Image 1 (cartoon, rainbow, N blue to C red):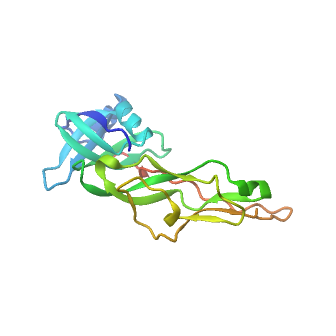
Image 2 (image 1 turned 90 degrees about the horizontal axis):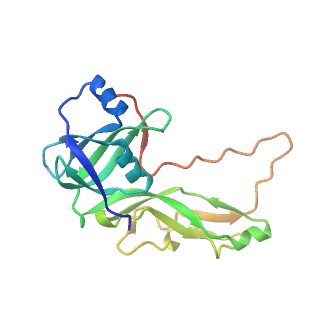
Image 3 (image 1 turned 60 degrees about the vertical axis):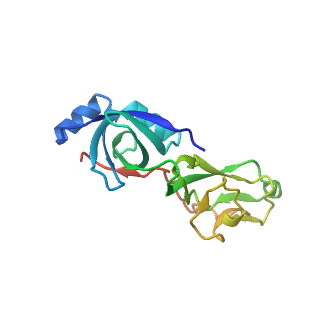
Amino acid sequence: MAEIHTLKVELRDKYSKRANRRLRSGGRVPAVLYGHKKAVKSLILSADELNAAVRHGNRFVALSGGLSENAFIKDVQWNTWGTEILHVDFARVDADERIQVTVAVEMRGEAPGTKEGGVVKLAIHTIELECEAAAIPEKIEVSINSLEFGKTIHVSDLELPKGVQALIDASTLVVSCVAPVEVADGEEAPAGEGEPEVIGRKKAEDE
């Protein structure tokens, strides 16, 4: 389970683009908090604290300071280059509330099949899960230590944490160890898919 991270926030009362630029130049990020049929709150928080939470995969956080609420990092908007957070949406949640979340899938270990000339391919880079807000895993690790040449690992083979349920078909391919693709001279190998972000990296300009 990911560590519960505390973020200090302030209530926000200025909403212009100029105010947003001033906030960001001062190392702070505008945000909103909504959900549970309560009033939407506009917030401000430290960019460094938010980056630390996102970098460590913390999705369930405790907001303190201007208000005191548990929240889920629902959406993050990034600048064009994906280097600066421009805005974040928080959704109110209870620790034991079951929510849907997308987390990263990562391989762990070394596949015996590679010694027979096989190439390990990760078919999915993220997986949608349902779990309690306080039990969101930082990532799902797939052990490939027993992956032989020609063999595959599917969603049904994953060892998910207790109380965590996969929301995609159990037969979905996750990892395979297959023969390398032969490329004729002068041709380029097909471009691989880029690894998606766990938390939506929306390329956005000022609000």
